[in-house]
Length: 573
Image (cartoon, rainbow, N blue to C red):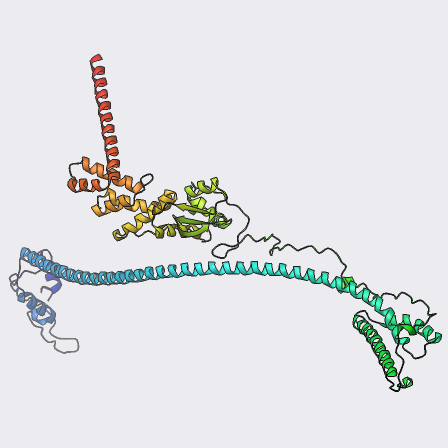
């Protein structure tokens, strides 16, 4: 049994021959005879041992047989074929992978395109919202401007009412002072009347008895001071007046009765028993030896009533001067056309300075002072503040400086459009109270050319600084330089030109001369016909053309002189 090959020995012998992943099948080795070693025929106990098989088979081992069967079923392939197949499989796998990546990227591209489209739609919607917001903003600006103007009017109205209140307070103070003066006069008269009537009243009362005697007279004289002391000053005037009237009536009645009695006796009428009637006082019944009446004493209060304003001392009342809330004098200087109160402050007038560059505090001062009338011939255009007109118009400044007492200024009849002039004058007046600054409105569309040129003409005629209509000049001159104008535009400019100071007219003349000197000008015949109708433009173009020719000739002379000098220097070298 020791001579039989074992599986481990078999594989140990074949380990050097296996070179590839697939095993090679070799021939089965020859079987060697089994050598049976001698053994004992029996055991120690007398039993007989069974005999063992003489040969060993691989089939006895199930695992080895299955392994060999699997190896035999495999087909033997070469390494090169295996490598090519692996490479092909890898390429196909890589191709499938790339195809999947491409599909994923296509899907991502479609997603991004959808996102971009959504963004574009969102941008379009936002642009529409921005346009709507701009329209709303313009509307709000207009509303704000209207409200601002309304607030200005309300402020002017409040100022006017404040001024009116101050005037009424001043008038009230004057009337109060007059009332106090009248009260002082009344008090002095009442005191005098009390002192006179207090003497007469007791005498009349106590002497009206039928039989006056010395005792009654003494009683009357004794009680007189006591009665006078009890009499109040405020109640004295009316009783005293009534007592004096009573005395007059009594005297008249006594005279009438006496005359009636005498007439009855003459006619034989029996006399009336006078004992039944009291005897009324008369001057004849005055006692002969009556004591002189003492001068009545004036009644005085125990306290000084002058402190309480009941009977103020008679002093010269000074007319109060109206003052503002902070003690500043508010002397009235009139009102502006908007109802704003004027002051005595004088602005600094400088026509060369743009009023739009001044702060609001300085612009308000131009509303002070008198107002003047602006006429175009015999037609009244407007009434504006004198100072603001002198600030904006050099002609008005010179006129009113030489004639300080003038209240109007007249420009030549038909020299400018009335509506355009009124627009400038209204703008001047607005600059005296508006919080913000702005220019005269410009309509840049070509259909408003005539209106714009009339506004420019009115500004030149009234002597306004060119900066006030500079935006008009820029827009129209830019169109002239771009050669985008028609013959009708040229005619309008010439008709409304102010040759002594008209930048638009000068710009048009220069442009026409430059186009004539160039070879690209095609409307020469039409221009010549137009120049016949407007000799002012023709004359201006002739001057400009001559100036251009002189300038070019001077340039040529300078060039020739430079060439000669260069030649001389070259020869000398």
